[in-house]
Image (cartoon, rainbow, N blue to C red; front, side, top):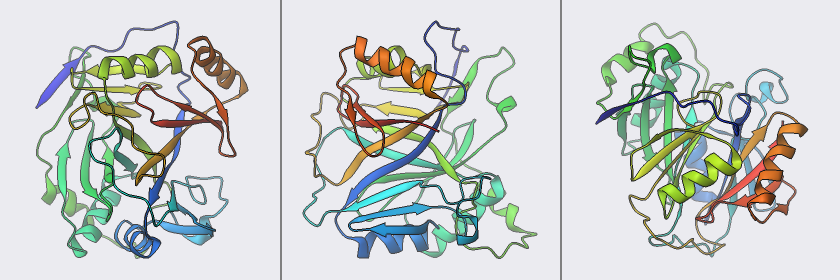
Length: 304
């Protein structure tokens, strides 16, 4: 599958190109099962555990607090709730996507996953090369590397995405001259995008586009992709498993929220005002300003 979409037109409502995603917060039932998976299989570093919340990041302990890259920053929060159950046919997380900084780092991740005999899927999306898997509780995960932005558009300037076979051998050839003995995810790894299960594509895409201010990069009817700053997508959403579905109970396994980092107070105020004008409920939390999309997925807005 491959499609080309004209570049989005400039709009009166549009987020700053400096907007990024911060971290994703999930509920899991058992740290003894989840933490070894995220540490040993995916290469996250457990930065600290506070009561029943584990904070995971990338890089080595020496990177903590470093202004460069994501060293020391949270990429994933896990809350342990032994009573949490996996919901059936509900909105929520389709997958969260970890962006590694190079094809070499993608090859390192692929090698580690293969050594742990993890069931994998692959997709060459033209803009990126991706590996797909699930954690022990069924939460979807993507590990991917971007291609240069110059390769995201065809000769007519149309934005291209698709799903083609990945050249796995080509990826693994990146390791032929490996000299790096470092373990785990590179410190410049970050949360690249979130893909959500939603109940209605056009309704939810309109919320993220017209209220929050993301640009709609593509809408194929059953799925939509939105971004800030010309990125291929910070947000994906689909109804492949969740058309007209209800939200999960609050204590379910899966997504609590993901964070959107706004660059300054002025941008935060603009987004907040649009949410208030649209009648969206706002909740102040320790993490930031919590809002919910029409499918009741949680988004926390913060300033960098």
